[in-house]
Length: 164
Image 1 (cartoon, rainbow, N blue to C red):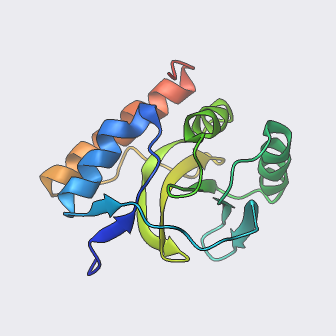
Image 2 (cartoon, one colour):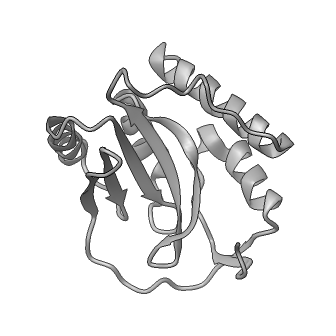
């Protein structure tokens, strides 16, 4: 449950603008401009061995080469899935970062509220194994069904390189 409905202002990638705005509206969350505390780390990687997935936590803009190296490092771990969690509050040039990740096969997964350091993140995902099946997921709410449809469409766009 989300009790705090006010957030620092966010940066939304243009290709996901409508979906992210709908998500914030669904949960009655409003954004306001407040200064953020300083943080040094650009990117951190984590492995969840129980779920066999890797996570890229991206808090500041980074160069293409640095991002590619981090993705390749997680790929060597032979995880089934890699998530890229992108800070919506701190990254101004978010469109370029999202486009880079899409070029590596990442597609929309959702919005994580208050996830790291009480800040919101856009989560993209990359399937790295044939064991992961997204076709048999079931949801019951109208919002959940629309979200799942959006995720499937975005996956196909990224697969066919028809990304914006």
